[in-house]
Length: 440
Image 1 (tube, rainbow, N blue to C red):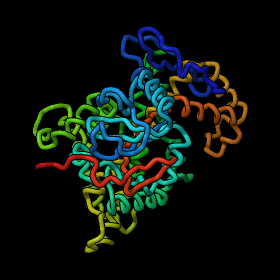
Image 2: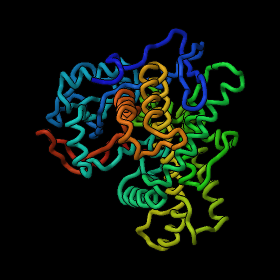
Image 3: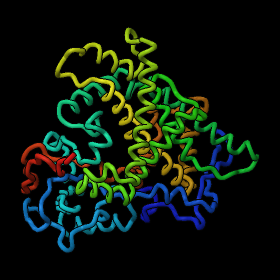
Image 4: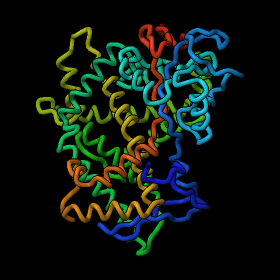
């Protein structure tokens, strides 16, 4: 039984809603305020079914190639399979899993996609993670990410970037007390921004927390990657966030799925046609340029003898592996790794926090219980630490309930099998190439 009502989300106020902050410090309360602008809740809405998708090649919808349950009827359009969508899409996917089982095939154009739906099926797929280690390198992804970085690369390049990234993040304090202190400092700055919104008018005033929350999360990434944070008024930093946000919104739209399909069919043509995909490429190039400017600043500082951040460690690794023909450490990979950190860490965390705020606003009785538990358990001058979760069972449960109720990533970047796989009695063949080759 969840802490929040079984309806699956907060009530939708008429005319839209923005967050309004009343009071300061420990007695702070969040309430729903009316606004004519689109509701923040609507901006954040995603469907909530755990799935794992696996493109398995270019086949004909008429061929029964996998002995898997196959969705029958007319060939699905790109809109059938969207990474984010409405509640109708959630219902549709739930219906498909109930009808065809937890592993089934759908089609996007001429590409078959094996869907793992539900905890057990996804768990089994993740246990055999090496079998599904590669990303689907479509013409669109190749053009956008050049098989560089961590998220959108394969083979030896992916292995080296991932291993180095994990090891370096641990050196920089990931999961340790030092990182917790940085998170605490950024959280204090965020609370101050919320408080100033009230002080400016002296009255409870509507506040859209999207930009402050996104800026705070992005600055945590900046501290680890660049060694310092940026001011919210820094124009280059804000332009980078705007471009990053444009890509993330595009990735969750119907247009994105349509363009992916068109790129599959006509990659040699789409490179030259105008459209939103060209705007996306420009946005990603701007984020990459921002990263390269920071890399150049680190080169000029020449702090390799005493590395302080991710760029320092990476440049040092480039020096160590210079002349090694097997090395994949270069500036292009470094820049793309930085972009990957922002793609993977900013939108997901910021959206989760915004959902948490909305749920606290929509259910003030739960907000009050959380506040009371914190006040009764901890010293008011004592900052909340991760280790305090054992003292705050109700607050801990509420956080988990938010993650359960409104998780933000329903479908990740598609993967493909690197060898023949047998799962739940079904045969999934190795994929040599899941998209048509570029003709240019």
